[in-house]
Structures are given as C-alpha cells and as structure tokens.
Image (cartoon, rainbow, N blue to C red; front, side, top):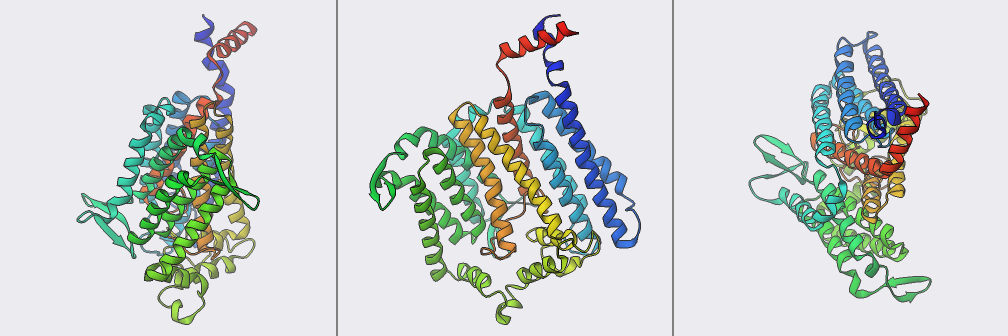
Length: 456
C-alpha cells in the first residue's frame, strides 16, 4: 500500500470522531430542550419528540458526511455550533407554536433547515476552490446590486409591514437581500484586494489622523449612496446598516487605516439624520427608539419593542423555564423578537450562553481568516465573520433598545427561509476556506501517512 493511499484515513479519523461526538452532543442538548418545553407546557414529553430528534439528527449527519468527504480538514467546531443554535431556534418556534402564536410553525422551520443543509452541501460540493470567486468579483457585485433592487421592481416586489424587502415568485416569498449580502461580501473582498495599496495611501493629516486622498473616496461614497438608497426606497434600515458597516470593516481590514472607519461613521450617521428629517418612516424608527414609553407611540408603533423588553425583564437572571413564559405577548416573537422570547424563558443566563455560541462561531471564522494563505481568503473570511457578528449586534441592539430597531432577524434561530438558506451558505463558505487554510501541503500529508502506516 502506498503512502498516498494510506494517508487520508489515519490522518483524520480521530478528529472526525470528535467532531461527530460534538455534533451528537449538540443534537442531544436540543432534544433535552424540546422535552423541557413539553414538560413545562403540560407535564408531558412531546409526542413528536422522536420524530423531530431523528429528523434533526439525520439532517446534521448528512451535513457531516458531506463535510467529511469534501472538506475533511475544515474547522471541526463550526458545524456543531451552528447545529446547536439552529436547534434552539427550532425548539423556541415549537414552543411559540404550542403557545398559540400565529405563523409560528416548527415543521416549516425544520423543512427550511433541510433546504439550508442542501444549500450547505451543494456549496461545498460545487465550490471545490473558493479562490475562483476572486475571478468573479465584478459579477458578484452586479448580482448583489440586482438582488438589492429586485424588491422595488413592479409586479414582483412586495411590501410587508412597511418594508419593501420581498419578492413574490410562483407563490413563494423570497427576501433577496439575504443573498445579496453574500454576493457583495465576495465583491468587497475581491475589489479591496485589488485596490488596497491605493486605498492605503494617506493624504492630508488632521490632528492625529492621516486622512485618505480625496480621489480614493469614490468606492466609499458609492457604497454609502447604495446603502442610503436601500434605507429610503425599501425602508430597510437593517440591510442598509449591515451593508455599509460590512464594507467599512473590510476596508479597515484591508488598509489598517482608522480614518476609513471614522469617515464611514460620519457618512452613515449624517445620512441617517438627514433621511430622518426628510422621510417619515425613518423618523418614526428614531422616535420609537427615543420615546418608546410615550403612550402616543405605544399603542401603534412601540408596542412590540416594549413587550419584548418586558419579557426579558420578567425572565430575570434564570428565566421562567421553557414552556412557562407568556409566548403570545410579543408580536413577531418567532422572527424579529425571538431573542426576547428566549430571554423570558431562559433568562439572562440562557441568553449569555447563546451569545457565547455565536461568539465562538465568529471566533472560528476570524481564526480561519488569520490562517488563510492569500489576501482574498483573509478578506473574504474576515468579511463573512464580521457580517455574522454585525448582524447579531444590529438585531440584539434593536430589540434591547440599544440602537433603533431595524427588522433584521437572528441568524439560524428566527423563522424564515431566505435568511436560513443564506446563513447556511455563509457557513459553507467559511468551512471551505477553513479546509484550505488548515490542509497541510501534499508532501506533509504523504510523509505523515507513511509514518503512521509503518507504526502499525
């Protein structure tokens, strides 16, 4: 037997076993939470517990098998961590469904999770080398812009709750902005790798900051203009803030210049303030944020925000217990405000534990960026990781009234198909880059495989 033939199995068998054990442990935690919901509601283990458990376990086993086959050197923690938060979201939606919350359906969410795993698997199978995306930089940018524009197009675009972020195709509603963020991060990474030397050049010095040259402000101004257009035309503060924040963060990673961050903050805050003075829907968001307790706003506008805050407050440190909260008092508790619904029943302790899981996902993504061997991979992995972290900050900051409420959803936990599919694709991209970054050179693999065969 040659060393090349013997190397793959002994090299990764132990690590794969550990990953499978972590994945099984994540599924067991989810099933324990599922049983706790049933016991909290009526003192009985839910009748469909075995079905849901087997369904979730089968899906994650399929994802694991694809990962083991097509990305064997990838970070072993990403898939179990995502399985845990996705499963907690399923349990929460099931609890809300049993509590009579309209439009909450654990079965639908499990189906969307299955489609998410399919998209995850397809991304790993088709995209064997993520660096080919660098050749599609401007194509990705064009696709991202088209996806952003689609909701304002006649006949296919539709408005839900005041925001024009949906399109209707063949009876299905899709939120193209969720996929646009992936395409635009690919574009930002490719563009900034090509232009980072120019963008890093300093112009005049103001106080202690080296300002960029005026001629280099074009990309920032264009991205700022697109984000403000999204804010104004689609009434979507969340996507606008996510888009511009991600670009500025990636620009800082590429150039290491603090001045870009300051310019970005000034541009967005200035644009938002002006938009708030001119457009009523932007002004309303700021009024809800600043004066949520105002009786004039409470009945029609700030009711859901205040109910979410009341839910977190009633949960306290340890929560009321799964199945023992008041699921029906928070509007959109299965989507925009699922973080508050979890906070009522698991308390601040449970929320901190969930945030730690998200922090680990982001940390593993950033670790992949540090380990990457080429500038494009570093920027792409860093941008995708920041997108996840920034979206979490925006949604959690909104529902806790730290910043104005934006309408984004909690990744992997909130109900909704578009966001879930896009986030599973995001994780697949991180896993593909992690596999490339952690894979030893071919000669090292052959030498290690030969050593292990001889030791046998």
